[in-house]
Length: 306
Image 1 (tube, one colour):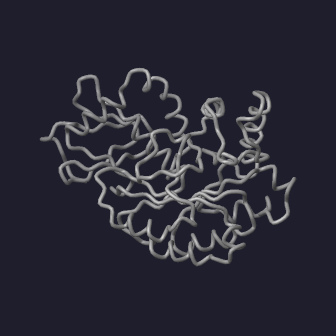
Image 2 (cartoon, one colour; image 1 turned 30 degrees about the vertical axis):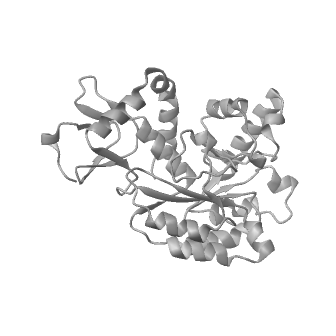
Image 3 (cartoon, one colour; image 1 turned 180 degrees about the vertical axis):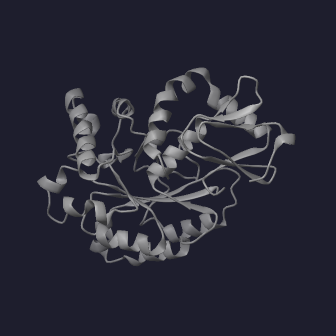
């Protein structure tokens, strides 16, 4: 997805206003009344993402499996570990090539439990992680996976200050619903939790709104248990589905947050998109798209199918 960082910055800049005036709730109600269903790119209502921690050398094989089946992975790597704990770790030299087509995300520069840190050390841990990945990849990270799954309101507040838009927990989401708060993003399952059955359930789903299936784990777990077939079979089953948006966590979070920032014009006649992303939706069975910083007329007689 193009211009994702610009979209993130715009989203974060308008978040305070949206939360204060209640517009997201009003927009959602109006769109529902108008029979408008917001979708992912390509007018899809399902999304599949993978979230893998620690940057172990087994990532090399996992990335190969993802690439083979057209999957997108988000890899949460403690940046300082590449130097302080290099044993069985991917190297800085291979970062750009190994994870090409995937996403690098934060996992704490030194993989410490952030709620236990003093304010000063917490800020340093976050700033070091962001700066390290900026240097190594030339890009700002968009999110995190909490080390040990541990977080607090204080940690989240500091993440927001740094324009981080998502972070994964280790708690389980019992449904395929999108997270209400992407900085408290609960995955649907660890890869050892009967993901074959979960795949069947998701493939059979006929959603009326955007959903997501997020699988998490550590690549070294496959190597240790010699059970690579679990993820290979899962990816093989899930590949090439026309109704699934194959994306990174950053792609999904940035897009959904842009959707949640849609506005209704003052006269109530137009749907306005203040982001730099194309936003896709369906109305009365017809597919539509509202472009960056553009609007869409809400009057039924002005509909045109794309």
